Length: 297
Image 1 (cartoon, rainbow, N blue to C red):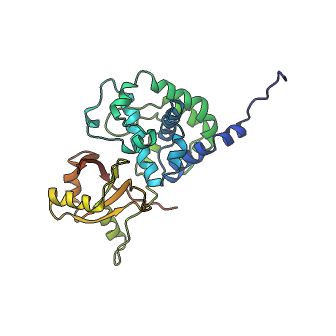
Image 2: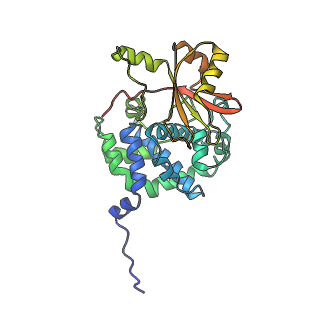
Image 3: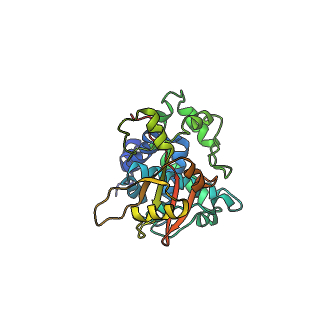
């Protein structure tokens, strides 16, 4: 046996982590999320795989960008819960239905809070040892998108990066606070509300202001008529249209866009929260404001 085993080169590592690089590119470049957040999100998803939730990365990569963005939001919530000494009360009503599908388990944010003593260090090790070497070039491209950062700033930002439970944002080092502000409006790439026939930008904006994004639990299909009947019963004649995810006849829609007749109904639905959870005929539905893609490449 040859005692000399040549080390794996960086290029070989990038090839081996090809799908991870593709997913990070979607998060940081296509969806324009903060590159530092994206590393944390990817670290959590890789941690899923290393702990028995097989093919998590490839499952997520196979989803539409709109769903990937929702999964990323859920990942941020999971990371925040693992950073808190006590479970945040504001997360009591927040579900992670898409993460449940990826993990194929009925987990909740409280599940991740219980892992706060072990999982964060394991996730950070995966980020440092696996992802920083193979994703730094993509991160640098994302940071160079008009922000003037370089690879040294990336390393400094990684050392100072942390997750907090305050409000709904991530805490960053001084190097990427400006980046966080620039990335604050996440661009959803996926199905968009249909254009107005005589609209223009003003009408299109008004449509987005009246639209909510709903997600459903796998195995518990919710129909358009159920959504309409539920909100009509609670709020009266408030729904203008419902746009379900387009799927085959034998598949279940996992999300939908609900357009209300006025933005005031959205405020009533959310009641001051970023997300709302409902039970429609015994099936859980999570809803938040729809964020349009304002910057199509």
